[in-house]
Length: 102
Picture 1 (cartoon, rainbow, N blue to C red):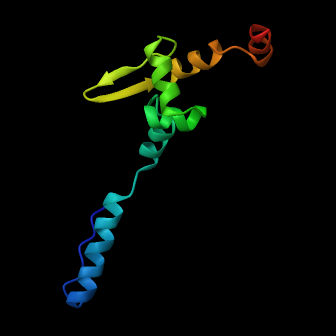
Picture 2: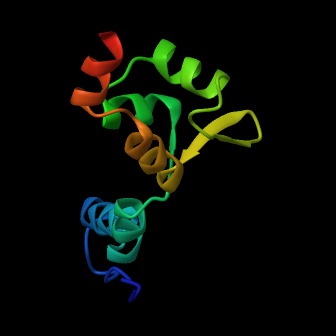
């Protein structure tokens, strides 16, 4: 990104505004960062629950019984997108669930 140097003939206020505009441009998220975030490959427990429509209790139960895989990143528990999709595919269909109930 090109750096902007305010003209010294500008007022102090105008130079401050120009500097603020440059700071804002530096903090804007780049297109590549937006794409990376859109293709994020892991999610937190809260994000998993929101994406897959389950509560935290159910998510932790699935982890406990080994039906859902998670990984640790420091203190954070993260679920890879592939693991979440595998979990979803292994869920019984509505017909299978009804048959199991009898």
